[in-house]
Length: 141
Image: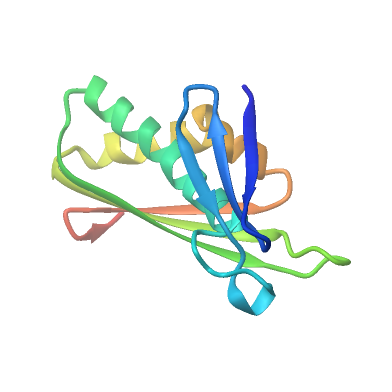
């Protein structure tokens, strides 16, 4: 896997491109010298965790013939200063599912994603606590 990153302009706005030509832009917030033209690298990390786990959960539920009519995830990260950096210390995901889905299968799919399949979670978990909750048809499981 290889990524190319190019600076746009003279501040902190970047365009990253993967080997297949897909482009993601990133920037820093204005208070840190950026122009706030795109998500920050740390926001993209949270987005990556949400995307990775969501792909897993949907894939597992589809294989179990569960009918998903709506899916969304919200992620919140808490950072702590360590020397000059501010890494994530705790990340919480709220996974909202709707449809004809078994409670047990929804919980099992999330467990499998975070404990076994999600490479982003496995990369982050040595340094940040990852918690998640499932809300199935408006009921928190």
